[in-house]
Length: 373
Image (tube, rainbow, N blue to C red; front, side, top):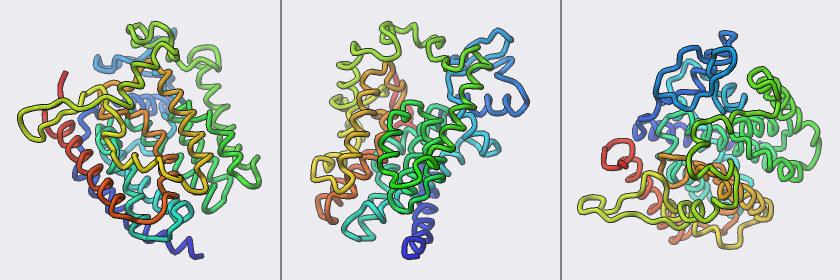
């Protein structure tokens, strides 16, 4: 009952966050609406698009004459549930729901019992990181990342704080249905689930079967997702395949070490449109290297597995602020940060700096033409 009483507070902060996100974001990439179009086609009984617009250049031709994408069935299903929402409103809904769930998750992960600290931590994944800018773009790529973060937040809450294995599994299905690499974390979720582990698997197994059927209908094999058929695989960085050790130095530099460029006018520094260090984008992450709390082993294992996948991947996400793929790391980083003691001046200062950095980045990317190739 005590935890249920937190829901009105969580809903309140989630609504405020959604309103702020609505006012500050501008879906400049909403026309890249791959999953929306594929969802509409599927609702109409078609496997793909018949005559796609020229700017959707990541579609894959099928033998039937249709064009499909390298999106998992779960990503299309996620959008299908909100098909009548504009991309802007969908990103607003995702942002608000993430803050809502992170606040609830903090009731079990945040050990000091401080409501102000719990509020700060709930806002951190959306407004003190690259999520603010990248989700704000409103394209299909960014929406899948947002759903993946939302799914993980829900899965962790219904696993660690209010154990409901079936609901937790449904949220995990939402997560890996949008970002298939999150399947690597299934053993961690099962270890964190104290009982009824088979119940957790119900929705993931069902989604896996539907995904296999969807792949078979498109490519005549349940194991083909279409990534290898994209034109992007012909780019130099992908010459060694979708995942390769060759890509680690390049990816590590862009994700962990790349800085900002100086300019002669406000804000006097400018990020690269292809990525920059996640620690420069969110200095609050420097607090990760403290004690970490009771879930630190599980969290750092998940962070390590996902980071390895990101470093091996031949494509770091294209046009973005910092690393949009690293949004998948944020729920686990949240667990580490939540167990890092009490609210302090250092935490408040780093949080404020992180919000300022990402607020400026959101303004630069979404509301100005200062960022360009």
